[in-house]
Amino acid sequence: MPKFATQDWCKEYCAAINGNEAYAEAASDWEGDFVFVIHPDGPLDKELKMWIGLYHGECTGASMVEEGEYKILEKGEEPSGGSPPPYEAEYLYEANYTDWVKILKKELDPIRALLSGKAKVKGDMAKIMRATKAAQELVRSTTLIETEFY
Image: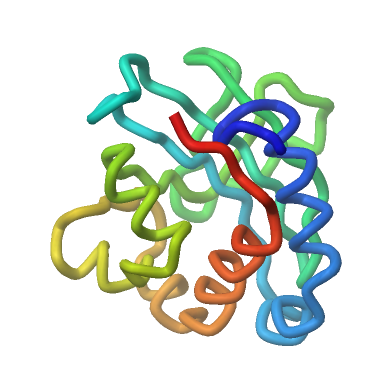
């Protein structure tokens, strides 16, 4: 059972996304990678970051990243197409660890977390709001992984 926000968990998450037909359908025209930031809170004593590559309903890769290993693209900026690092992402989604756990356990909807201020996003919010079903399926994909939390 992989521990949340580890390289093994990232690998399992990418496989779960790619096995989720509902996500593939909901995100069939989605283009935009994410960096997920987990702020220390509760039992987590350090900040963790994950890059998730998402393109047309598929996970193209996932990796734990450190500061300096990723770049958040500015609106309208095209990815360089080079090999990572740096990992390039159109979006940064961040929340405290305890809120991430609630999101992963489906106790807190990721869009509601944004609207309530429990999570923040950098990137084209309008595009995210048009993809709420895809966001929900990304979360549902996490429930397919037996996850150990901190």
